[in-house]
Length: 190
Image 1: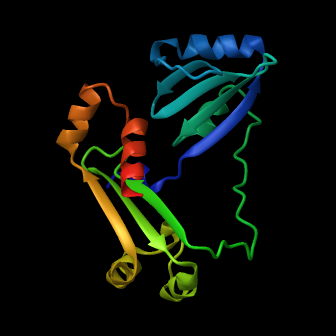
Image 2: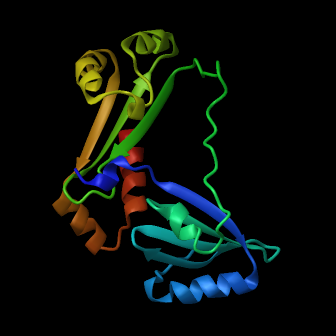
């Protein structure tokens, strides 16, 4: 497992003057990548960081730096920029209706296949999930996941799809992009 897999990706946004936008575009010009976003003026990929310049309908521009080390890269252009604190869901808020959801892993990895899993949970089973210790996977140890997964798989309806690397390569060679592939996998799993 690489060191970067344990680091959290950062997203940093800074407002830009027209001159700053031109400077940034010139600096990252050799790393520019095509984009077709309606409000995207420029996009580049540099050292694992995506730099995107947006322009709204009023002509205001901002740069968004995304990836591991994005803050340091953004500080080249505005030394006062900082990461925003993440907002957590309000305490006590929880939808208690029946729910279905999905998530994926293996995106961006070289050795793992893209895997999507969807699960259906009845509102009446939320208390049981809490008792099992189910929460954000980043806050649960691998050992705990291995312990509760077999119990959860017996109780809940799940669908798991695995896209092997060779099939992924075939799809991308035929013009599919990662977002399209993930969307189709999520839709099918759901």
